[in-house]
Length: 255
Image (cartoon, rainbow, N blue to C red):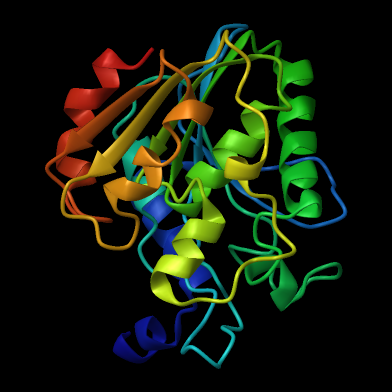
């Protein structure tokens, strides 16, 4: 048994965690770039759906070695969704969660192109199909870290979006790369370089006061883009700890 656990891939471990959290691996419409999803047991029935988006996971093993499977070892967004009683969907990123070797995938999708047009378009296509099939009236899109970048980009494209919630999100990917001495993601879309979100979308941006990966300065530099009605909440957390402990208090207050 120990050997089997040791040989499990990150995708296997996520599937096992999802089962432990009583989440169901769901079917998604076919897209040019493969992806998967997990759902909780609550029915949408024409109402509001919470959509959770994960961070970047493990795109690189070292600064010079690309990971063969970017799936996160411990998916925070999946754990956050398990605390949410509202109808919720965890939409995995293209080429993550066991799809990295499938046709249409390659390391570009989790390195330079991790927030690219093909990635955003594939995720938007899945959400559009689900909205139309289930009569979803409103979306709340919730993203952690790089998932917050994708949440912003998707909110621009999905007219049913009523609220955007980012958690420790690097919404200026150029400033984030420069801060850490990384190569800029030149094939990706940068929220900071685009237009503001439509006025009808409520915005909550949660920032960890001890976060060194995406410090508060990233969000502070975007005040004009976010607009005067956006809420920026600085919380007792770093990049990963301690969002799980805070989430049950945040959930009832979400717009």
